[in-house]
Amino acid sequence: MALEVGVLIGFLVIFLVVLLGPFKIHVIEENLEPFLLVCGIAAMTLSGFVEIPGEKTGWRMEIIEEALTSPLHVGDIAGIPIGIFQIVLVVGLIIYKWHSPIHKAIRKLTDILSVKILSFLLIVVLGLFSSVMSAILAAIILVEVVNAMPIPRKSKIDLTIIACFSIGLGAALTPLGEPLSTIVVSKLSGAPYHADFMFLFNMLGKYVIPGVFAFGIVGMFFLGKTNPKDQEIGAADYNETIKDVIMRAIKVYVFIAALVLLGEGFKPLILEYFIQIPSSILYWVNMVSAILDNATLAAAEIGPSMSELQIKSILMGLLIAGGMLIPGNIPNIISAGKLGITSKEWARLGVPMGLIAMAIYFVIIFVLGI
Image 1 (cartoon, rainbow, N blue to C red):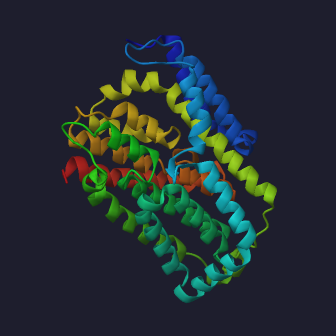
Image 2: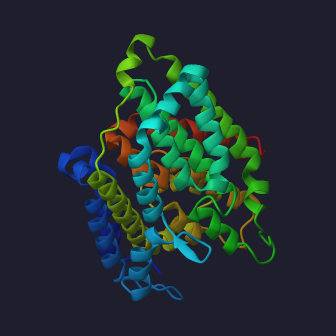
């Protein structure tokens, strides 16, 4: 099956609009969540014109239900569904109530450890433990610590982006970390891999753990360029209202729903072209995860018939590229929303850092064969 030219052009237009719109049009940047939702609806509608043997495409109740419930349910605690929306809302309300002692403790910790050491620990600890606490909670902790640190806005943005790369990598080590790892373990649970809870840790740990520490060192370098005289002006006061907390949770809800629709909408394109690409090239092609849901890409690309090298290359490409732009990872979305980071501000560091990291891992995996 080959996609019709009109459909292919339609997918390309939507992709370019999603990629470039936030950078070129200010009103889109200011309304990123509804914009992505509209693009997701357009992609889903377009996919309805494609028929794939053995695959369901286009609008159907299960996808509508998934888009509506995904932000509300990533797991269960004592039988109670827990989702990204609830976590962002509840933690936001807790911080709203007790923000003063929380921020005082963070600033005191900064005085004791120094900004550089605290930044290193923040990047490494959250990166490593995001696989257990979940990337969502790690991102919420990140933004509150960064917001309370006495550093200029640019340094806060740099630290946040680097930490989100670390969290995005670390969260993939267990099924508790993020949807991508849950999907991969599920798809590979049968023969020949019989994937269990530690499967991804055993496969990717030797790449992810050094990477997390490397991002920690890079973070210290960026914070090392901060002028000590500028630090006092960077200690932000907490000025959120309950309305701000609720609206942030709603925006996250819309963002996740939009990514579900975008990922499912682009599924025909992924199935038709992506899975046919050699793994060394697919590694780079998966930079599209900077704007598409990496869990959807992983679900479409990975299967038990693949070799370990193919699986590693797909996953590492998805994980690294996810840090390059705001839509690429849930931690990016949460952090950018809380700290008011624009798409241009994120891409200024996220894109070059992602490209450098991808080049390094490409050499390690494909050239050195480690």
